[in-house]
Image (cartoon, rainbow, N blue to C red; front, side, top):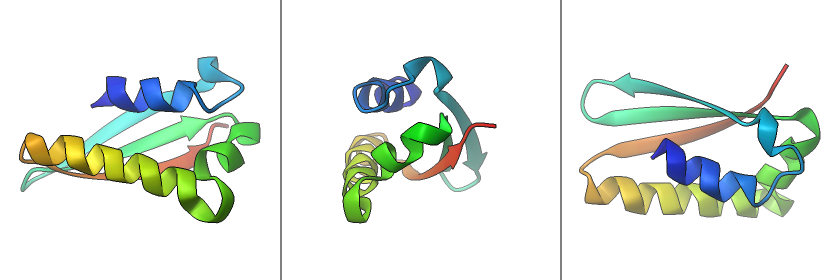
Amino acid sequence: MEKLIRFLVEAIVDYPQDIQIDAHTIDGGSVTYRLYVHPDDVGKVIGRQGRIVKSLRQILAASAHRQGLRVQLEIEAKR
């Protein structure tokens, strides 16, 4: 799943070298992915009115559903 996130986000951002993904598994088959990107790229990943991040979450949810998982995606600026 992390490879999928990285693949999708690298196409959007200006600083792909700053992408960092942390996964936190919660019992019950739920995984939270925290995506860290360069501060200048946060707006690009979120998109106008949140459209980009909503699409990313839908793609991840569809992929996770095939594996019997639930996923959440959080975006943060890398410090």
